[in-house]
Image (tube, rainbow, N blue to C red; front, top):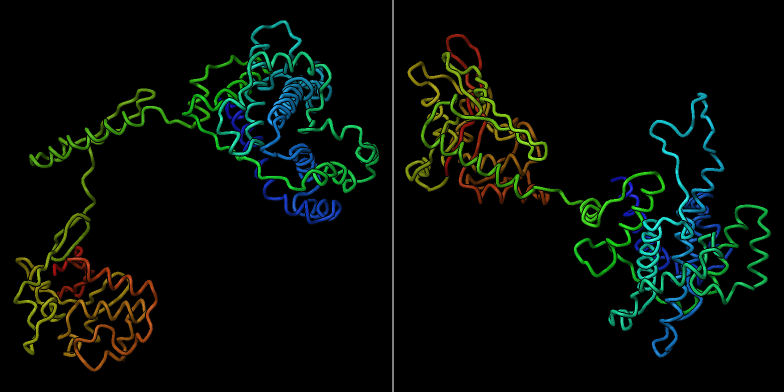
Length: 495
């Protein structure tokens, strides 16, 4: 699969990154001098990357304009693209492999004295159209066809590319190009329309005289500078695995299989290429259906009231295949008041009700803190002695502490919801200025005088409180006999 990923990366680099690179830099190339632009990319990219980008841009800036009334335009693009594709195939599968074998001959050894081509390193094989291997020839022809077609589509304006057949390259076209150009092209750096500039003395001087990296970058950019005037945007291609007619999978398949043959790896068919290059996750729908069915079975067990020992956790991998079922562990129990225990699934529910919404002064509002504390104390006591409520908190906000507010009627007679809102809008994560804060002149004041300006987060949190039908509060109680404190299960106040 790594050769398929190599082919996919090659596709993205040639037909997505490089045309985008031209489109992004065409204005700078036009307006700046060659030297200034070369210095800019050297500064941004460093020496090696700048040299590579300069070579790519010199190759990708075409030396002819895309005039729609030019009847020969499409044919010239096709011819130049075929030459480019032949050179690319020769560079990737012959020249680069020969260079690698020159650096590391078959009988060479590594720094440890072991044979270099051993273990995970496979000895590469040079591939060329001149081989007598029909499989290699077939893949090279397909590579040239698909690469040339995608290159043509980079340059055709929308009015021409919509015709469909303009970019198609036949097998005979590819074979003719390979037979006429294969032996003459080995550098892979020929640009579209390069015939018009091949005899330019300035280009020859730039190629022969490279005293430093800057001059070499400038030499590679020279043709880009000459051809950038009136240059139209190139078409950027995104890989699409599901369209059989676009040639994307054909290119990746041919490239990856040629790469595989270079290293003695068996080629794969287009379906496998589509799966890996398209990053398709197999059996996803099947797994989802299986997991949904298992979840429904456990839900039915719960509705039937079956004990915990009849429930099952499931571990499934359909690709292996692997199925394992285990009995679930009971929820962890936490110590509570009067020797009681509770789990994270337990709740103490307090409902306001219509009576609970009547304030002591006759006005209608939410349940007051005083009534809330009484109800929670009774529910927490059970059959034991009624505990004392130590603190009441909403998230990080503490809205009540018995050592501060045990006799504070102003706090105790206010609705719980109003106290929570005031805590949020005060911006204090602990006591929201309960140590002597200003709560406003009226009991119905939601935010008091401490929140003249609210942040967007505070406003959203207050609005969320209004939308919800309940509040979850944390309550700590104190055992009157022992003085020990316990945290109750979450207390849910139903509005």
